[in-house]
Image (cartoon, rainbow, N blue to C red; front, top):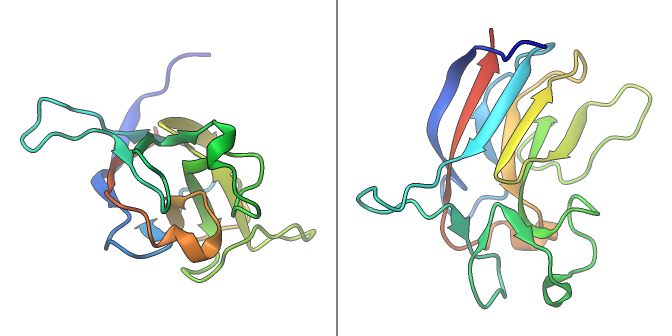
Length: 156
């Protein structure tokens, strides 16, 4: 397969934005049937520096968008089970208040792991906005300290 040509859809999006929200709306409508690339920006030479890390509630130190893989940071009932606490996650569809995936035969929203880098084929359904947030228990998602800077592109 040839490497895709990427077109920027969102450049330098802060997550969370504003600070204190559970989900950041990045796109009003994810491009159905297209590959999207979500990439966390890390630039220690920028002024101010862009570290590519944030600090979930209760963490002693920052973690990357891949989350914390240590058992010390395990919490029950994160939004996306099986993905480390502190990882960047995404949702297509639903609203800013939705916290779980929809496992019905015709789902209205899906959740997936992003981490520091993700390329994903956006399904034809469900359709809707692209949201980004931190994988944690819903009541702790808005308590993350710091922000990630994220670029989102689609394949042409």
